[in-house]
Length: 252
Image (cartoon, rainbow, N blue to C red):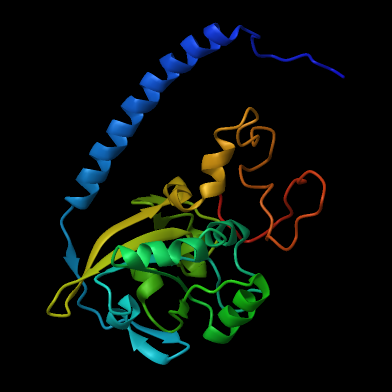
């Protein structure tokens, strides 16, 4: 067996000293994350004035109905455009973590669901294939995706300048990933409180948090794009993940 390693091999006491040094850094990071979370909660809100409508399994419903009786709503902007054969693999990777969270979020007054621009029938077909149970509605025919900067026209993409992640930048797809948060007040008014895009959506990718603990980490440095290894969960083989095939997902 090849026992060579690029890491130092030390005694248990030496390892413990190094681990405690790292622990101090981890605690500082935790406190910083707590402080940033407090600033996030303190952000001002924007009242939703437009009558966004969505196609759901219960028919055509307004944004307020998506809260399902709770006061907080988290939306995954899922990249599935009209006519796509499959949803974005990276967004699917995010969604693979959702079902297990739902009961816990509901206990904290939070409803979580996905929104895509594809028609509901196309959403339901892909959802059935993937075996997901979370609510997933269609914003087809609505300005919702465009207003929250996760859908772009072909002309916008061709121009090399779309408004994504709070800046004007080139983007290679008409659909983009994101997460948006809303609050519904006692009088029924709905407010937009937060949105995050780009690598910020990794907060839904619990798999990454575990990989970050391992010796090899995410092991993506040699890949053409960071998430090229990600597959739909029904497309992995029993061996090591191979490099990704071309797809419509954005580079997160």
